[in-house]
Length: 540
Image (cartoon, rainbow, N blue to C red; front, side, top):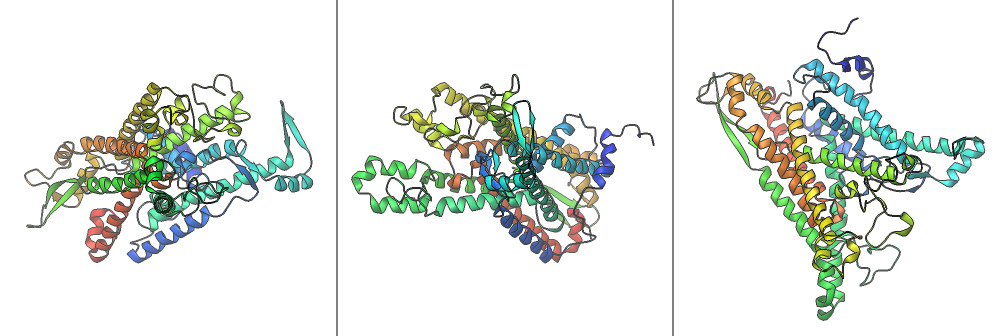
């Protein structure tokens, strides 16, 4: 059958997309209690998966260590990849659609369906793209497990200067299979929450992971270094226990000579990080409650009035999620190109300091991590985690020279400028894409208001007129919301957060909790007043 004129070539993938495992939509209205049970059940299952370790895994290096909290995963577990493949697939589809490389009109149901179907295929591809290089570089199978497999399947083969035993290859593909199963389960869990629960599964997993990190970061009584006993030089890792321990074990002179500095500024989990976390909570809560309210009246029911709220943070926290996932992939691929056994030998790209330079895992200096870049483009795009990475060495370069890792002052300043610029500009870009691809643009909102029988007083009941009014607010608020959440996340990273949850993670969690509360309130309202379901587009 010839392809219809004007249709995207993606429709050729429809037979594959239709056969992909998916969660069935409910036939009718799902009661509030059922939605809460599904949401709570998926959350419990998520925590269970983060504690199920990959079978046959030995030595590991976590390439997502900087972004672990917001990747909603746990290193070495079935959730090792977290939401990375899902969000990366979403980023690619949004960029291609926004740039008109993929010609789809997401206002048409069939185009929207193929968009979602192809995104599922892309998620599977991204799971393999992220899993295979990690397993063949940093997720080393356990030696005993490999030995058992080599006895069962002896032999091997050589490619160039590399030798592959059958046992080792089988062990690695068993690990890849577990990563694939875990990541695709995350994708299905997100669909369950979206269709049968409340809110978004991805947002729920991020909030759960970050909340756990903040809780342990604030209250952890274990010493900072697990290899050494609890002492003044090795206090508890949590902010509150650390503060209490130092205050009770140091005298006034010792506190003034450096004790207060350790409590307030030094990692891990200094007091300034706890203060910064609380401050982010209040700032986000205030701005989330700020909105522009357009007055509405019903065209047929006299006296029926209402308001349509346009949030100041209109694009919510989605732009920061997408931006963080993009930067996490930059970090992962630059690390692979630097020291992966095969990829580091690619001509021009492999082991290139301009792309990203990483420290030698066998010779780490104080404050360094093997997965954190120390130079190159990857370093300028990497997180700034707390005041000790920039403020302390700038104030006292002799005392805190090791935090500079050999960089000059101008490089530190350039890192701050680039980090802020990328977070703000990237978040604005993703905010605009998100609004246009999710039916939150002026045209879609105008049609939604018109179909509900409402209109703006003093204006004709016409979607085109409503669109002109909404165009005065929505594009501007979209740009502001993207810039605000991106800049606030970068600022929070510079101040530091408890539990190494990152400023982005805290920002996302606060926004997610607020939206979850509002979603629950909306569900309860629709349960009491079923006529409201048609306005919110949830069916009967």
